Length: 84
Image (cartoon, rainbow, N blue to C red; front, side, top):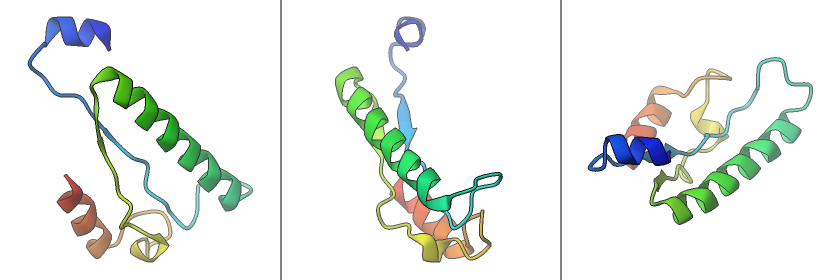
């Protein structure tokens, strides 16, 4: 990240949180993977705050926005894009 800032000092780095989904490919426990997702989002938010990185939260995207099991529904995609 430091090299990125030196090379492109006017650019803005943005972290988009990992959104929830009903199923995770290859996962034995969706609950465990969802907990990891939350931990990654939390850790990245903490890192971003200390590094001048913007965070886009998707708190309004729920499991109901993932009708297709893995991918966002059309409504979920709209909500995701509006968060930016």
